[in-house]
Length: 342
Image (cartoon, rainbow, N blue to C red; front, side, top):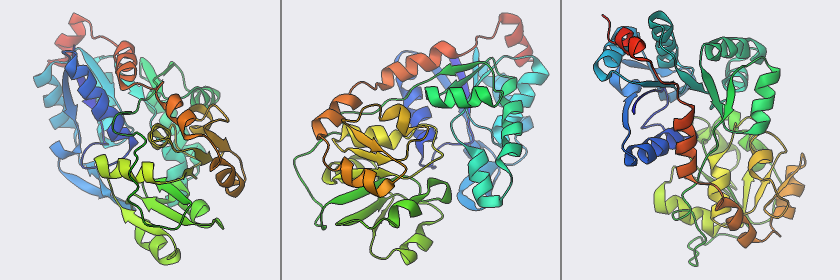
């Protein structure tokens, strides 16, 4: 199977979308499938307003059309609702090519927080964007229900996985910090609501692992917290296993891969009872979901790390990749001929 993946989120970005897409690609390539990734690094770009780490493709249409013709895919997946995603949607509509999409990110809430554009307006645009897809892949049941209420159609499930070999309990403890250690891992950006965590009156240490546009300001406002910057691989996994509780203050994530990474490391979760946490933290044995984040954090510290680990072992990247592939819409021979037309 030749899969064309169009995504505005790709390396060197570090986020859950990139981790998901790159891992699924690796899993499916190991099964013999062929991928062509169309991402911003193949185009002239400009920095995303308010988020310069993200690059946006400039006028990608002509180059994108050439890439589609050269690769001659038999499946097309549009992962994101950015310049590349819109250009790919336009091309597929023009050529009569079926495609799938995915709802990875709550752009509406993020744009509202950054630019004060009403979320309802952005959701209207996103509903239009996804309406042309054969299927829209969504990570959790609660998000599927919410999007259905907002008028999205053809929504299908696409769960997530975790590397349980990398993220695991480890005997060594390398952090010489006052305990308990309360950990946050992820992008340091306004939509992640990190201030709700940093403002809690907690004993021990608040530890923030990650990078993003709000990092300098938060370092200045909360000097008592420990900010490590971006970590990855074994070093990131060590931070998880050396901590005592994982605090997830976001109200807008559609899943939260970091939740699975924490649980796989034997780390109980404290979070708000919102989409993402309510789907991943499905047992009181592994986390506490409460509108009172301080109470949730204190209660979560008493939970059993072994139960957290057992729960995470149920999530497989292999199953995630197979589910993704099963939802892709095949191009019929006549449609492939159209994709090659000049």
